[in-house]
Length: 312
Image (cartoon, rainbow, N blue to C red; front, side):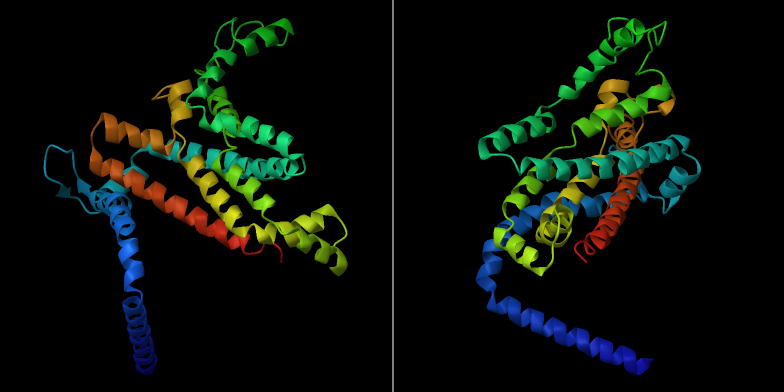
């Protein structure tokens, strides 16, 4: 065992020496990279590290942080019922809207790719518009209005399905499903554009070579040629889909309020906003953010492992 560790340490030292030599040879490259690297470290890396540190403390902004160890995490998992409800709601949203939105983005991009250029441009704008139109999802509060003037209630009453209007955004039974519908409607975002661009970048000669090698239909063409050429776009779309699914807050707050009835539409981010922006218990809020961060990393690793099998 000692011999193994000594060889391992020697190998790592040798790799470190080689890395330092390569870095010295590329000093100008690192000099040009430095401004971005410094800004990235200041505004992305440092906040993440600071948040992880504060998650082990009691910190209310007014007083210096007081170290608590794992107390925040113990309270979250064993004592905070609202957090557990928020985790359940967030996982439901992620499991349902994440894969569905991802698949919808790719299928729509694939179908649009077959259209003439000017039709394709219009279709991309139509599908992409909801994701960049700000809080346009508030229009669903008109469709699902809780009185007889709401479009959905009026339609159901005219058809004789219901006798009295349904309070869609107050009844816990309907709140989360409606929010999922709105999230799916807004899911054709940046990942969708990356799929459109990736499909345009596939070399047409590969399709001809595939037909020579035995590709018989469009599904085989998609699996063995199109998807392997789009792995970077697929990964980017997956990351964006996961980020959107786990970061849901604006839609539920705008439609159902915060807190929602029986916390039926509460998510991890709305719980984080409650403790971070309302109660100013920053240590507890940082613990919530750290758990969300770990959940997103684990999902990203799972997606990476799945995408490696594409085309095999």
